[in-house]
Image (cartoon, rainbow, N blue to C red; front, side):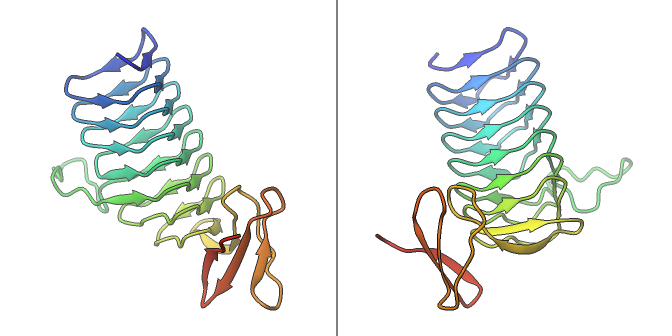
Length: 191
């Protein structure tokens, strides 16, 4: 076993858990999950069956990652954020097997207490502000806030708001990496 699980965590059979992953107090890893290397799963989390987490995924306390969700490498899920997996749930109607898919792409951050309505993918290095309710797809590098969420800017891979000049160029204040905005799409430029 190349991972750490607190004694209060429950790990169901047939789950694959990568090297150096940490699973903390009262968390439940359900059957048939695939969890990458160096992930950190906080206290009181549930990872439902067939969920896939890439490498270096950070999940803060009180998060449930439901069947149908895939998180690529380096995703950050803030405290008490919420995924849904059925668009029209009813207690008296069994909709198992009708789960919508949600893909959270590499490097995305989802802030505390945010809600991601199922079927809406989150782009690479996107940044979802705390408390946002995402009801549509989020572009790569987009910064979205509010309920329903709306895009208010663009973020660098280091998590800083980008300020584009008239030529559509911006520099991350921390990494000094260069970005270009063209046709409502941001790309990181090679140095």
